[in-house]
Amino acid sequence: MACETSKQAWDKLKEDLDKIMVVVNNIRLLGDQISDFRIVEKTKEEQANKRNTLKEHFKLEARGLELLKK
Image 1 (cartoon, rainbow, N blue to C red):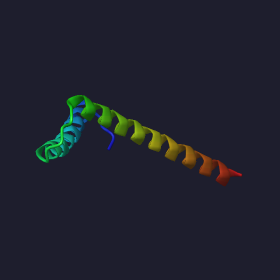
Image 2: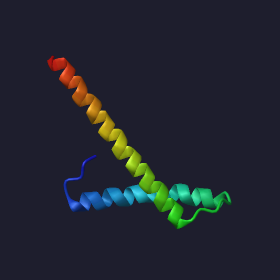
Image 3: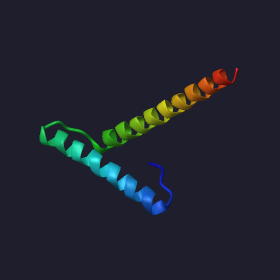
């Protein structure tokens, strides 16, 4: 979902962070130790992976369109 306003972006961010914290709290309830630093690092990695996957998808789409034009 693309956000059109800053309020929508903040609401989306809060929603995503709430989901992450539910998972983190469940992990902690199971007795595993996980630092806030590790949570931030894993979240950043996941976002980078999503961006890379999206870039690859668009590259493949563009390549497919180029092949159709030939």
